Length: 299
Image (cartoon, rainbow, N blue to C red; front, side):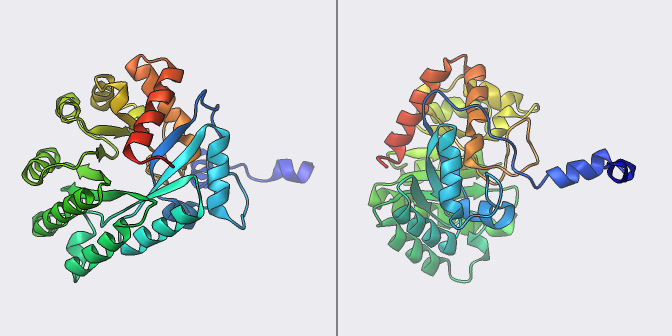
């Protein structure tokens, strides 16, 4: 005991650095089950580990179990390139709680030596039964400069066409590109189901998306203190057009921002949305679940 007490104490900065890699504790379970409409299980496991603590012989099963305990019983695994899309389609075949989407991320498209061949690979995966969406695709003007935008746009247009050919939801990544995303959707004609992943627009953009019948998927960013405009957008979105997501392992909701994210933390975002929209929590959970089934289901 004396030797332990005499050891140097951990500084606040050292403690913050140590805890940054730890998964947060599980939140209070939701009253009704919901889905995580957008997660990256492959990146989560490879970069952050397995939620729930300790090694696992089956990290995907463990992640599903931990999420199910708090009322998150369905997951949508999202592809960002050919390899992750193929992996997600295979995982969806193995785990009943998981469905997949497949696509080339907009920042991936300009880097490809043969975009057409990669798109053919995505289209072949789109035909699989448990692949229920095409995404994440779209436009990203934050990480890709002017020189890559033509490739992004060509890829986005091709993904829209694939979604329509196969009757799948279109899952859109839109970063600093609201007007161009709408322009391209208008040019090509939107599929029946459009999901704005990690919705990042203001109230005006939200109104336009709602008017068009799109689904707005809110991530942990809606809990951030600086996200006033995003909460205003959420407040005017009809419950029937709201989805919720993690984008794990990123965008961990408050109060655990900066630590790894995973599907079991969805209740934090759902409760924040209930407060923002003035909705009954049970009613909001039911609406999110129903919207998820319309977009991707049945599982």
